[in-house]
Structures are given as C-alpha cells and as structure tokens.
Image (cartoon, rainbow, N blue to C red):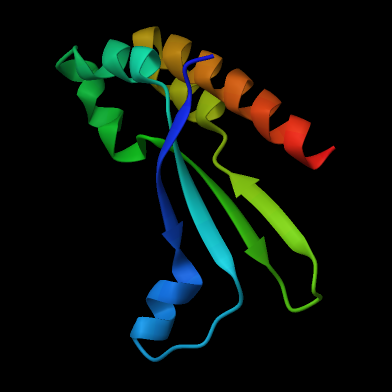
Length: 104
C-alpha cells in the first residue's frame, strides 16, 4: 500500500519530562511518499504541508477506555480543491481503511 509510520510521539513521556502527569497518548505519523510528493512538488499546494504527514492519535481517557482520533483530511482537502482535494481524499480513504481494520 505504500504507507509507513516514520514517527511516533509519546505524549505521556513528553509531558513526564516537563513535570506533568497525563494519561497515555501516542500520536502516530502516517506517510505515503507517493501521495505526499504530489502535493509537495507543486508550489501552491505546499500550503497544506503543515498537515503532513497524516496523524492518528491513540489515547486513554479516565474511564479506562482507549480511543482513536484523526483529522478528516478529505473534508479539509475539499475546501482547497484541485490536487489537494484529490490527494487528501485518497489518503483519507486509505488511512480510514487501515484504522478501521485495527479497531473493528
């Protein structure tokens, strides 16, 4: 499929270093170089690079349950139109399929 996880941010560990105690929370950065390059190779489309790579958060709440969240990149892309809408729409469908297969 072409997806990888180049970085995982352990937010609990980071907050511990600053003296704050929080519940478990990890943010996974998902990257698909082919999708990313379609946006990054074009000057006007690079404006959405701050939303790259796609991020998924897996976190615990005080109820003891684990939750998963991610941004609706398809909706964000549709507001921009063009190549951004195309790429973010495909990336959104693919990442949602990956996530759904893990939580079902």
